[in-house]
Length: 530
Image: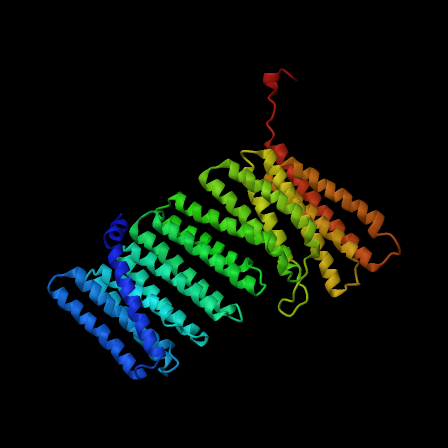
């Protein structure tokens, strides 16, 4: 409401000052371009006019005429900023960049201090507005892009600090709006040859305002809603737009910037949840936005084609969406979201099983392939981990669903063993034992793990599933793996298979004995049986 009242009262005055400042700046620009005065005289006249306006404003401050004081002093600061812009971006002067940088930093610190210390709201508004508009009037050249970025960043940090400390929302909105205008103008004007710098500038602006807005919401205790939420959404949308536009101009996929924004939103959701005294609404908004961006990123990852890793990245992104949806459902006690996450996980498994066999590997620690320590294996493990965790959580309330989730997770483990053995034999061309025999051993280990899980969860379905795997593997061993001539490797193989089978038998016996002990004993006195 305060910001709306200020706009109603002073927008015409602000517009008038803006016109006068623009007129003065254009006059300086014309004078500079036509060499009406020597370069040193131009700089001196700019500083002289700025300082004169500052002292005039101070004179009115002593007379308690605050409105006139702030307008004059703010205009003086704007003229000084315009002069610094000329010094920084003019090729006729050879001032070192560090001197310009320190000078702009000092004048911004002075403006920030005066407005904060003496509660001069209009002063900093006019000063920052003039300072940000100056580069638009005083055209910088392509080789000035880093200095221009530093100049604009300093003014934005000063505006954010004062606007947050004093809760002057209009200052934050104005600085953000003009900065976006500067970026758009100079990106088109510079027409960069590579994407690195413009993307870095856009990302820096996004990160600065993202952090500033979150801190502002915390200080203003608005529960992360209202103008701050609106400005954060505009900030994110602009970054996404610029990222797509910039990277698209260089034929680069925009998946990465979407991931950056999505990650920023997910991280912000955690901070917001705790900073807002665990209010769910604002953090859920940020989580949903982050999930949306992850979903779009996952759908657009295919063009990357990096050694088959696009499948891994896509699957992990979707898994992140699944896990986040599940967590939100559990946190808000919304069973529909939990069941949606289960269904999405099942569909993700189908996708992964269709593409996992094509995922290639990259060297790690100088080794060609490390089983169970590669991108594909970690994806299998992450998928299985969610299934086992969800199965455990559902065991008390929905035993059937728990069993289904665990069976699916165990199938993933089987796929993990198969792919790791297959890739290991391909990578190192192993000959002392056949790949088929190694897979049979891995399946026996797999059956052993199923029996262990069944004993842990006390679910009869896993005894059945483990038995099926054991029987099928035994058939494979006797009718496929042992065909042909006898060899020492086959003898060792049979010994390993035998030991694993005995281990399974031991677990099964322990399982049966435990069930027998826990089974209630029938009392003959009550039944009448002898």
